[in-house]
Amino acid sequence: MPSSNTKTEALQKSGQVKIFKELFSSYRHKNYLTSWKRAYVKRIFHDMPPKKNGKFLDIGTGSGFMVIEAAKRGMNAVGLDISPEGVELCKTYARVALSPKDQKNVKFVVGDAENMKLPANSFDRVCSIALLEHLVHDKKVVADIGRLTKKGGIISICVPNTYERTAFFLKILNKRNDKHVGHLRHYKAEDLIAEFRKNSFELIDLTYHGHTCMMVNWIINMIWSEIPPIVDRFWWWIVDLDMRQKEKDNSMNFTITMRKI
Image (cartoon, rainbow, N blue to C red; front, side, top):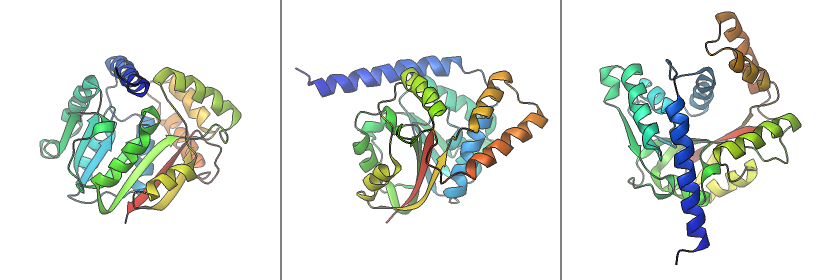
C-alpha cells in the first residue's frame, strides 16, 4: 500500500500538471516577455550576472522566458518543467524570439523537479522562480540544486514571503493566489538561506519585492493587455520604487542570490 506521503505527493503533482495545462493553454501573448517577466529578468540578471558560454538551468521554467533571455546573453540554457504543454509553449516562444544561432543554445525538457536526472556539477547559473512552494519535498530539491551547481556557480531563488511579515492587503492577494495555483507553503528568508547554507552556498543578496506599491501595476495590467508607452514609463517607475524598498520585509515575495562554495 502506498504511504499517505506518497499519495499526497502524487495528488499534488497531478494537480499541478492540471493547473498549468489550463494556464499554458490559455496563453495568447504575442510577446513572451510581459512587463512582469521583464522586471524579473532585470532583477535576476543584475544580481546573478550571466556567464558567457556558461551553462544555465531554469527549474520550473514555465513559459521559458528566463531560458530565452539567458541564451540571448550568451549562455547555453536548459529549462525544465513538469508540464508538457508548457515545454511546447517554450519551444514556440524560443523559435520566435531567438536567432537560429541562439536557438541551438536552448533546450527545454519535461521533467520532475523532485527527481531531476541531470549530471552533477553541470551548471554555472541556476534559477528557480515560484517553484519550491509547490513541491512536497522542497528540501530535497534544495539539496539537488547544490548537487547540480558548479563550485563558484550562482543561484537565484524566488519564493513567496511568510504571511507573518506580508502587508495586510498583500496577504489577501497571496491567499487567493495560493488557492488558485496550489502553493503548499510560504518561507522566511532566514530559514531558506539556512537550508541552502547546509548545501554549501553563501549569501550574495536578499531582495524583498512585490511591496504594496506594486498593486498599482497589477491594476494597470488588468486595464491594458498592451500598456501604452506613457503608462509603461510609470509602470517602471513603480518597479524602481519597489526595488528601493528591497530591505523591507513586508513584501509578497523575496529572492535570494547565493554562490556555491
